[in-house]
Length: 461
Image 1 (spheres, rainbow, N blue to C red):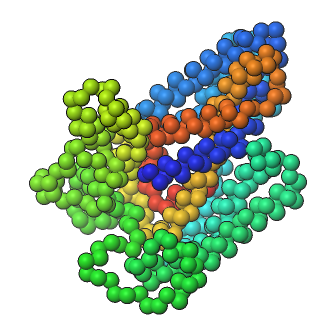
Image 2: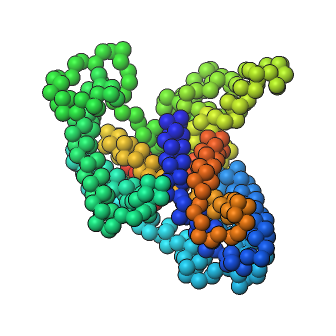
Image 3: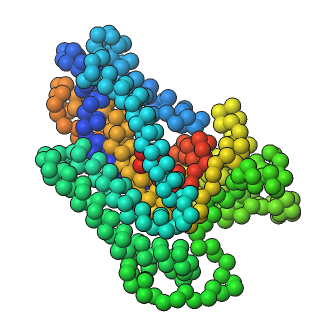
């Protein structure tokens, strides 16, 4: 969980600072007719402050109850409300160059993302996963997927134009050349270094490999035969990505009831094993221990109480303990294990066990191939989110600062970099402290996830 948090923090912050200036400028000057505030710019300052307070309040409440709402929707709605309240409905730019284009994007974007994700997964499903030798097909396709993913990420930076990198003045030919160059370069590195490592690890099941052996590249192909695995070595070559989730056929064969199946999903441990009924009754998990993969909120709170004891709250050790708890509370939750707990609202989530049982399971080694791609697509999605949603939220703040610093509306003034840095930092803090609420809902309450499915979803989006 911590690795994912660090990666997301880096990409969210980078997207906001490098590419976010144009998006923030759209929210700042193209939603309402700012020129109508020339005589009273302080009214626009107050209105933008109200838009920030209103949208942030709603976002906080929605995040707390796990509703995956959009920051863009909230901030645009807040700015439109301010425009109507101050200068009337005719003061809002309802045309295509104003809010109409934004509204259209809200409708078109989910549809396009869904279609692209469906096409990508259907190709993966029928071209790789359901073939007689899915691992071989997956190894062949992996460089192509890496080229596609890296090309999309590069396109986001150079095509949209990153003012901080001064690439917004590139010609079309230069832009296409950079995108293709990065895509083919990444594919070449994948073929030279990653494929030999994956072949050795998955095909030959070399248990002696470590992550740093990937840098040996082609040398791994001449490593020699795999030594016999010691009897005390119990680690699997790859993890079971479907652990704790049974298909309908498996449930029927095992004769497990619905309630027992729910317990299997809810009670699986951090190591991925399924506790038996005997273990559950005779070896209950301690309440004051947090596993490395996270734990329940009650476990984390119990640990904090145990650590602080009866000492006053203002002692240095207690202050550090409480700060660590509140900042890392998102890391100490495992969204995948919490998504089917008793705290789930059946009216919102439905029968998760039945939904997961309908999902087809694929070869774990082939799924492992897509775990690398899913990291790249998750980084791409985080970068795009930072460049869009974070920057949207900073539009009103940029307006307030520019009016305060110049005493004019300055509609063409650039968005200050420190505003983007502030917004990127804020979303990182929110991710580490509050983001697990959304992760828990999107993690598995929509469908049962696996690396191949997650890769298709994220790249399509």
